Length: 336
Image 1: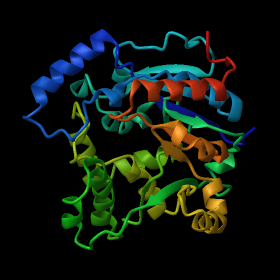
Image 2: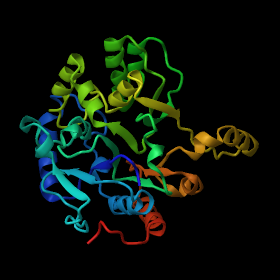
Image 3: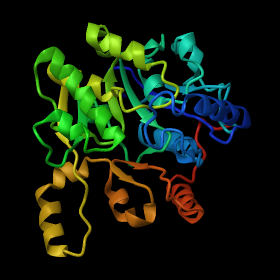
Image 4: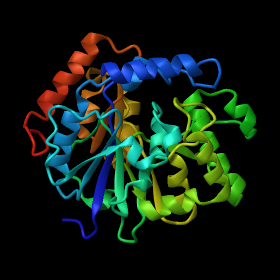
């Protein structure tokens, strides 16, 4: 058992809910063309519930039973039908409980994430994850927080980028633009360049008081107050990556390079790379959209993410679900 309390926070939505879908379509029609919305911000796959959440919670029960409490942030009175809401470790957090009234309704995960520290009972140490992220083996708390109370943040490297930040922003996708802006707002505040990496899209550790401290920096506070009302994601927002970088500046975080296991036709080069970076690979999250493409890599990973995509066919979604059922077949305490 951990010496410190460590909670988990999930964001969850059922994009098939008729009431939710009607509101989403209404607001998208109202905003699109008036306010900037980045590509794919309202696409089906961003909100599609493929049943992963059930298996994600099973992975929690199996691999990290030491977790203190689980908070599930959701809107429109949505609750998974299979969830045991009477379990003492489970609390549903409606959007209106942590977000300002003028920001609702929201269809923007980034806006929601900016308000997570408003959960009153949330522990100082917590993990943030999406419903498509899974623990894959027994993991101890020191995988996320070291003895010096620092968060352990895993990141991926950018490809080579120009020194001219404005030129770089103009050449990348909308999500990467928001990551660059997250670094830039801290550079402007602390005169420290932070463009060395990007989130590994796994289970991310945070310190609640540190987030609140970061959010009170005038420039960041102004930015968050402006963006929290965005109904859909835009490329002018900063990400929660800002909080990870802030902890890095304040020496409250250790950053570790996450590396993907290589599987290409160059088997000898793969072997050399995978051997040289064995420790990094062993402790890195695996991200995929089709588990059939990376089943072996997943089998070795401590955590993994099955990210939905616009080109995921019904067959791919079916195979992904079958994989999860085989990996996590046992009903857990969080189910009815």
